[in-house]
View (cartoon, rainbow over the protein chains, first blue to last red):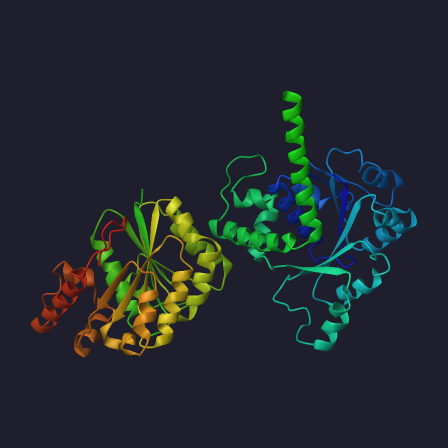
Length: 258
Length: 234
């Protein structure tokens, strides 16, 4: 299976980068796709709090930490790497990756690279799309429109909407639906994955006492978000390659058992 | 094993006998079985049905998540308690949207609680359409369509019968019309169907008592559904 590096980022804070990363890891886990994650929110590590077993906190400005992510993609048993870029670090990370040849290697097909750019309903957030355009040529560029509130991303203003979204020929768009605030806070407070919250499980595996209503809200949100993820060619490809690798593994096992 | 029930009384329109029906149901429940009764009133903040059940009610503001949690979590965790929800017509869509999104009836059934939805059909064709929309939101609830004789008959509208028949339902129920005088009496805060049934209303005029007994008999004697786990009290 070809290694896949998925960067999740935004330059603006509070638009839901880590939430999107968590939802993506949850999606992959439920499909038995092994993934590892890097949290660049050094030293606090919000993503690390929810996925301590598979997440490492790094400082992407440090060469040694860049090596941890990039130089291990081929050798790591886990082929899907998710990097949650801290607020404000996306452009810098892309520039660094461009300078050291990471983007070029991806363009040449050495590995799959995707940028999930989480945007909120503000002009500042949307302006970032133009700013990163120089890096996203020939890589999988996904704009995740986070419906943090009851917004419509300027669809009411045709001129503004067209300015930001109509010209994105190389981008794929997904919508991150709004999650009920109280449900979000409860998951956050519990410090568990979305799936564990839905299943009423605490982080240590014991039964929880989470609200049925809030679990229902999270389940519905996850279901809606799954539909969005499943639209992406990148995700389809990961799922197919994982299935294929699994089939091959079974075939090899059968052969060796003969 | 279903050992308690949640009865949701709803309609797409206000003032068509919904609260009266809910009261009748709640009063009947309070007289039967070992389960306690609790009433949820969604007419926030003042309450409607709540005043008839002063010791066993909560008034819920469905626009607040905290209140949604209070309503649905309480009902799903209420072992040995039957619940009646008197749902405001204006909250019909929101309530059943939440109900469906959180798979409430599936969760309730897993917790040993059956859910029955009574939809009062108003006099318009649109009411039948709304009933169909509510039905579509249910997974394993029972669905009963109630016709209030006092508000007119939607089925008299051309084409309505065909659409009505297409709705998957467990039962139809006719809610008989009361005279204005008797209706005024039962709508007063002092009146209780359970007191009446228990024989505590001997001071009422004989005509009214007779009318009320006929009213209750007409409701209780209607066709029951066979094979259901739910005890349909009426």
